[in-house]
Image (cartoon, rainbow, N blue to C red; front, top):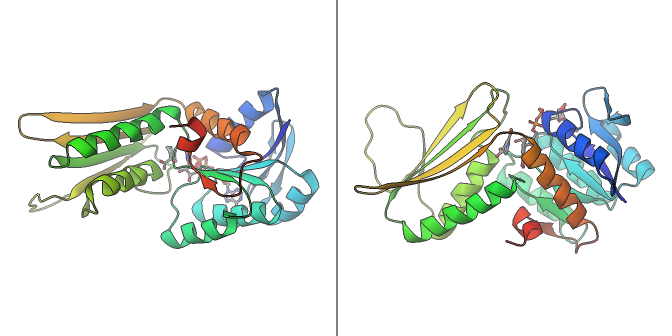
Length: 252
Ligand SMILES: NC(=O)c1ccc[n+]([C@@H]2O[C@H](COP(=O)([O-])OP(=O)(O)OC[C@H]3O[C@@H](n4cnc5c(N)ncnc54)[C@H](O)[C@@H]3O)[C@@H](O)[C@H]2O)c1
Ligand SMILES: O=C(O)C1=N[C@H](C(=O)O)CCC1
């Protein structure tokens, strides 16, 4: 049995993941952590300030965190202190927060950290890498669209796309939207849409002379992220104490 605690338990992702863990025959949902009050599929949800005591009491194998960046950093430190493996889906970390996370995790606990846990997006990233290798002289524009409640922009997935493009093409200037007089050079354009209940759309356009290639992914349901996070939880327990990504889980 993999014993799981979810932080951000009462959020959109926390409740989706809670349902899957609760129904999994090989997993036990032992509780949740949130700043809001409530319960998660019959289990206790405790305030974030009590995370250390809760982890000591419940002794979970894994903590799955889908919160906000500043909260996630504290939750990650608490999991590492209490020898609990981590799955982190939270996005919007600053470079300084990433450094703090790395020093809390490396050599202490295994952690799968990914800006997107869907299998489809992990394949999409591979396709983007392949296209960038071949089409480095095309103009590149990245577009993402999410629901009206999303707190960070651009999305974590879009930032991962930009990292992949930088790895393949060298670091290029990023231009976030365009207005007024513009002159296109070899920058990468980045465009963010927020509205309604859009679950998560990403696309990378490679525009050449007389042809364009557009690689796109559209999520129709948060279940794709939740299923990936639960798959990562099964995979991570007992691994060497370091940071992994979803590509490691999927063997890509
Ligand atoms: N990696 C992925 O595949 C993936 C997929 C979807 C969302 N996300 C990311 O997950 C995060 C959460 O997304 P969401 O749509 O579920 O947001 P949400 O706002 O619905 O849920 C976040 C929850 O975290 C709680 N919270 C705030 N501070 C907390 C703390 N200190 N400790 C515990 N809980 C706390 C909030 O009360 C809320 O219930 C975002 O960063 C989002 O970008 C990642
Ligand atoms: O709904 C969100 O928030 C999502 N966040 C992730 C990101 O920032 O890339 C993954 C897609 C959904």
